[in-house]
Image (cartoon, rainbow, N blue to C red; front, side, top):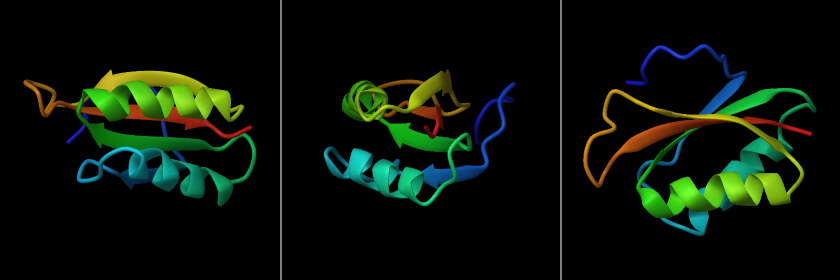
Length: 87
């Protein structure tokens, strides 16, 4: 469960069970289904997706608004929520 965020997502996907490069593929597909300006929340687990998904989203022209730890954010399997505005 995510900690209380100041941001709201129009859509939310959970990719905590996926590994790179599938993590960004699923994120990209979700963004493509959204209208420009909408915000996607992406729950992910681990260091590699935490580095790669925001970088790939930025390279694709989207805006990363925030990266927030969730209540399950301790240890190597930490879960974070990334908020991405579709451009």
